[in-house]
Structures are given as C-alpha cells and as structure tokens.
Image (cartoon, rainbow, N blue to C red; front, side):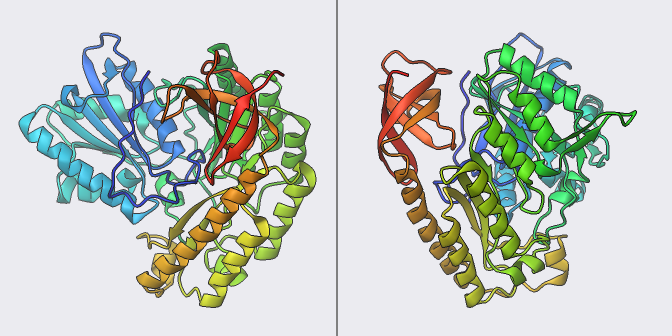
Length: 484
C-alpha cells in the first residue's frame, strides 16, 4: 500500500541525517495512514505526527475503528472522521498541528458533517483549550483512552462534544491486533510498554502518557510470531525506556526483563531482524548487550540519548546519571559489541543556564563517542514540566541556535567518518523498496540501521541481500550485490 508523507516546510525538523525509528523522539514526519478500502460505510482519515510511538498508536486506533465500521482513506475530502495523532515534545510540533487544524476546519465549513478529533499527547495537554475555549475540534482522546473511541464518536454523532484523556496504570492494548497501515510491509513496530517514570525536567511525556507499565511478554512474542507468519522480516520493539521493561505473571512465577524478552523474540526465527528503541543510559545493562552479541538477528544499533555532555546540566535535566556513567555505558557497548556497533543520540543545546564551557563539554562527548546518527535540537520550554516551573530559560535564542549549529556540524563530520568504516565491507541489507531517486536502485538498511543503495538486478522488497559497499555520503552507503 502507498503511504503518503506530508512534508511541512514550517516544521522545525532535526538534522536530516538522523534516523526516524526510535520511540519518543520527533522524526519531522507527518504520516497519513494508508487506505483499507473494504467497503465499510464510514471513512477515517488519520494523520500521525512526530514519533514512532504515535505511528504505532494510529495502527491501534485504526484497528479499533475498523471494527466499528470505518475504513481508512488517504483523501481528506472523502472522510467522515478526521483524527490528528499529535506530539507535544516540542513547541514547533504543536504549532504544526494547530496550523493543520486551521486548514481542516476550513474544509469542515464546506462539509458540516465532518467530525474532527485530536488524539495523543496534545489531546491530554490542551483538552480544555481545544474543546471549550477555541472550539476547534469535536472530540479529544488521550493515549490511554482509544478503546473509548466508539462511545465518544456516538456522543459526537448525537451533537455533543466528547473527551476522554484519563491516564491509566494498566492499559497496554495488548489484546488489540494493529492494522498495519504505517508499515512498508517489511518492517513493523511492536509496542512493548507505555508511559514513562523518568521525570526528565525538560520532558512532557510522563504527563501526557502516564506512568510506566509493561505489556504481557506472551502477547508481544505472539504479535511478533504473527508478523513473521505474515511475511514481515523485521520488528522494532518500542517503549519510552525499553530497558526498564519488566513483566510478571499474575501468580508471580514468571518474570521477564528486557534482555529476556529480546531473546524470546530473537529465537522466533533467525530470519526475523530485531531492533528496539529507546534505551535509557541509566538502565541499559550488560545483560542486554550480551544478549545482542549472542544473536546475529538482533541488530547492532543502540539509540542512547545523552542530551548533554556536562554533568551539572545532566543533573538539572534530572537524567539521573552523570557524564562518567554515560561514558561507562558507551565503553561497555564497544567492549561487548565492538567498534562497529552503531550508536545514535539526542542532544539539546542551550538548556537552562548552560554555559559556553558546558556546551563545549557536549562537543567533547560527541568527539569522544563519535555517534553514527543524532537528533539535535535547541531547548524549547514545555509548559508543565519541572524545568518550566523551576528553572529559568535564560540562554538567548541566538546563542541556542549557534550552539546547535556547532553540534550539527560536529555530527555531520562523524556521520561521514562512521559511514566510511563500512567501505570495503559486505553488509547484509534488508530491502525496503526502491531508491527515492531511481527505480533502477533498491534501498534497504544494514545491521547498523544505515541506508544502503544498490542496483536492483532481480532483487525485491523483503529480500536479504549481501552488498559490498564501495562509497558513501554522510547519510547513505552505496554498493553492489554479491553472491553469499
């Protein structure tokens, strides 16, 4: 199925070389769920903003509403219900959604029967403004209330406004089989937990997605088994902090941590690639790293957000580790998984009271680690967070932007250095489709999550292909297929 991507020029996106596959970091994408076209009476148009967790949630929403008589459509004009699944992690993300709502409401004036709703993190944070003050939507539904959508839609059909943004300590949607509308048919996202207990001072996620809870391990393994049977070749296990995954059976006789869950999924088939995101530096264990080393189908790629290279700033961010701890975890990755294991990160420039010397500490950490990829932002104060309540956003905007430019420049250099390591090596590439520039070339990803382009020959989407890399840019590897 096709999968339109709406590229909004006014969206403040991260550096273009960063990957878009970890759970809570905004990717700069807006995805429109693909059409199902099964003849159902009503049409759902759903746009998903920001992060892979939102894309995964939209598949759950589509599944719930599919059972209620809704097909999805890729055309706003033919929709009966429009839902925006939103992100609150940065101010620009919220501005983007507001501008889109303004466009949609212009469309609604010409189609008064159209229902418009907001899902996700903005729904929880701005419910009163959307419904009562600005009156720009018909329903507002938080991340833990998607099962209530059929009832809420009935209320709106009856002429009422509807809202449910209650957060849950139990909801994991473990029994709902997502409708895979946001997938390329090769790779799929599997949510293993919801919420977050890490109260980072800059982050709204604990307030918009609630407390951390882990999904039943058996349901996760079964979902991955079903995906394998359906022809999928890769799963990415998603969580705000996957390393803190911990599930226990009701009788307490069975307990599963993340390393054990990772192993259970890897054992399903050597042909099923396993990825995960996001890891928290305070929680990633040697047990996880040794499990990765034990199984060839667990990809050698770890997203390990640092946020800053300075210990004082990290304490203000309430990251609960210092620079030395972070360095130790990187050293463990290199020791157990080797120098070629890809590491990516998040970096925030210009956090409250950050000095020039502390900014230089971030640059020095980047030089020390040499990340393969990064998401890089300047600090944007989010209402309701600890930083907004307790700390002064006192770094001038022009200084934030200059520091961010320096961070991006260092990372671009490292992107190229790390990609050059791949030249002359053979990489096992999972084909995801054609290159964006030419149907004569295929595009896929290697073990380290790097994009590889090579001549298509007779290969097809979903094939594993051994590719000898002969060239690269800072964002892409180029090669030719060879015999195994």
